[in-house]
Length: 444
Length: 44
Image (cartoon, rainbow over the protein chains, first blue to last red):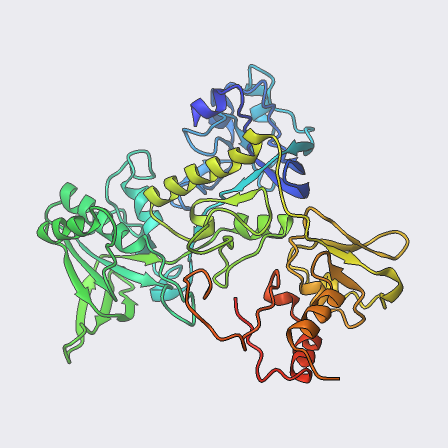
């Protein structure tokens, strides 16, 4: 990330969001809102003197709420650029930070800034969010956490410096249950398989086992989906390390109000018995959802979404990188959850795809386009509604106008127009009628 | 497609190319039936 920030041809606009995109391939115009950190990006050296004196503690988003950060703080230690930001909603404006800053970088009068960009191609890689439903007591029971929270606990730079401690009392849990498929593969919640969670259980359970060999770890699953290079071998090594994998769905979890341990009811598939387990901590392998950023950018750029809410690729098998709009490409989890190596491959593919028209310097396309016939138009505007590319609009004189770049010549408008007021060049109605008359001759 | 795989098909099958099945309107289908076609297949 540091190298990317230093590269002369790369400009990172952080703490910012895209509010408007217009135009077409080679000539996009984007408006970016740079949110104010109330800290000058040019003056802040990332020294942290302000954080020391700030009196306000707030939940740390990066540690999934398991630790605190100050009101003025850096997003996380390795943030690029290393600039501190102020959470204005919680700031009490004591200005202790302003006094402490030797570079005079803190300025409460800095406003949000809008930047206009002229760009040729766009790659959307806005990632995923974790499902946080109330399943199995999540959000209610202290010791029911999700995989991302576990990752932060096990991380050496996390809230517990990598020591396995459970949220309720900070003691090390020795009996741990992993539940796979939480919120996934369920038509009432999220119908799809979230791809990464089975392997995430393998990784984290193996990590815990290697650090704390006396741990008793159980992992319940519907199917163990360890497809792909090396994952099946990892599953075997995980079982050899001593983690017990049981097939079946967990029924009910109750919390002991004194010990905060969890009593789990579980029926292993193929048996007629209900097993009751008491564990110290439950880890939920929760579903992967399209991120909030993905939902927002799809609205701003008017991108299609699949039925599961992830960004829609141009072709699910032959082109999972392009989108219906020429010049806009997608990569990573935003297109659908995938493992790291697949995301990297797709990202490189998107970069190549974007560089082709930019390298050529021009873009060639067939000009089979919709042409409106003004005299016949009854202004019902059904064509505008049905156009999948938003290529038709109404100009100042009230007549239809077709954007010949956005139009892809699909013909939906010509087919739906009840007045035959819009037609496709080279595929006009009278041409088709003449063709049909010739193909099906009738004796007069 | 039948042509590209060199399969033979009878001359009673007439082919009309459209850029996209969305281009096909009811008037085209009805005109075909009206002019004696026994069936209309929309493919693609």
